[in-house]
Image (cartoon, rainbow, N blue to C red; front, side):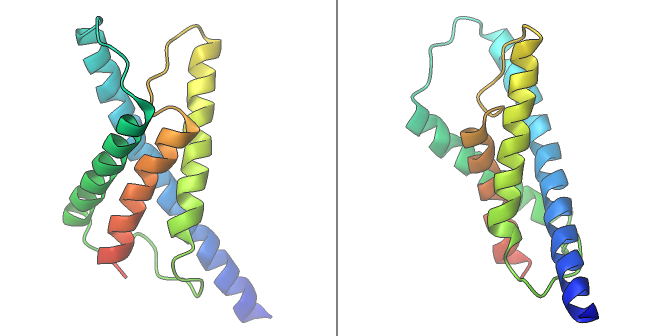
Length: 135
């Protein structure tokens, strides 16, 4: 029973650290996107499928850079190997959608990455690269 609880807590810790890491990266990307949007106020809307592909590629790039900067796992591996590949992008997407909702409630305009779909897509790109290279 103790081994089960240890495995469960280890898996939960892995997911939470991955989510925190991905949200931090997405916050930086959101800040950059907001700055670029302010520079070019007359930009036209990008199609959702093209934006999703762009955020996936940007996530893959950010994941690659994170592997170069932090070439080891953030937490020791758990018995439920790979669970963070699905759960952390889901949680990150939820957090980013809440960030976007909070900004809209305060009367500010949210950027695309501050939604569930684009936040999930970006975080999935980061998670895929980190999972592939740091098994």
